Amino acid sequence: MKRHFFLFPLFLILSLSVFAERADRDKPIHLEADRATVEDINRKDSTRVSVFTGNVILTQGTLRISADKVVIKEDTNGFRHATATGNLVSFRQKQDGIDEYVEGWSQRVEYDNRTDKIELFKQARLKRGEDEVNGDYISYNMNSEFFQVIGNYARNEETSTNTDANNRVRIIIQPKNKSAESNLE
Image (cartoon, rainbow, N blue to C red):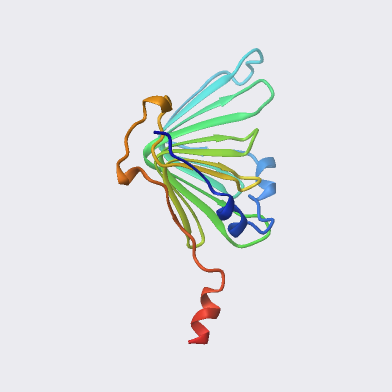
């Protein structure tokens, strides 16, 4: 059984025209790793693939991804798609206009800088402030802050029949006026 949960209420609660740091997209990507394999940078006819392994740290402006391995595919137009894997990959990015970060963790993270979309697979967790979303798969559009969370994700969703309670979507939404409520007591 396919479990989808579209977080329109969470989107409305969390967003007040707050988006990922807009300047990040125009900043260079910095990578650190124990080992790297980079294809010829002058290649013009197809996608270039670079592989970074061992304590990999990818940064682009305020975006930071930490993983055991990162594979970056760059197309002929310069757009990049990164797949990060590890025993919990983490990412963090500052929100535009406020001093707040979105953070996420999962076994695999895929980031597409053309669409500013990040996908988290297996043991996926996304956090902003004290609000938190957990599921097997989380898709997060960094520009619009649209979330899609699936409790039991399988590529072939027709064969996904697991109804285990541990595979359900879990959300924690803190009250907006938490500090104001405690002052009233």
